[in-house]
Image 1 (tube, rainbow, N blue to C red):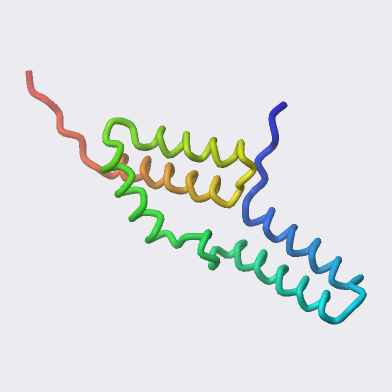
Image 2 (image 1 turned 135 degrees about the horizontal axis):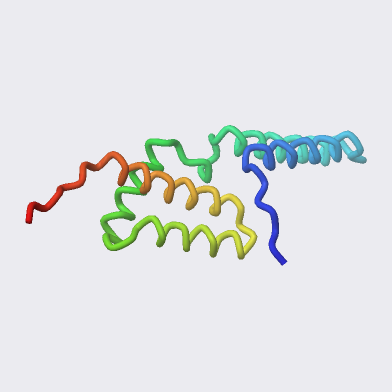
Length: 118
């Protein structure tokens, strides 16, 4: 059975909304505050400001390091890491690895190819 991959930002916003609804039903002020704090964390993930939501600059740096580590086929290695994270249910790392794989492919497109003359 194959699971559908939700849009990450949309998924995080949906989780924040669910947690806020639970906060409205909280029995104590402490529970309410705790749930609202959790909703804020989901919101920060949606805009990429949590540590797991790396900036584009950090993603490019990680992609370059990964390409040096796996020079033969770095994009497929990053895609493999993404699939392992997805299978483990870790959607945050799935998104990070997917972005790294995309950055590697983008770097490959921007790198000029040398043509051999025969």
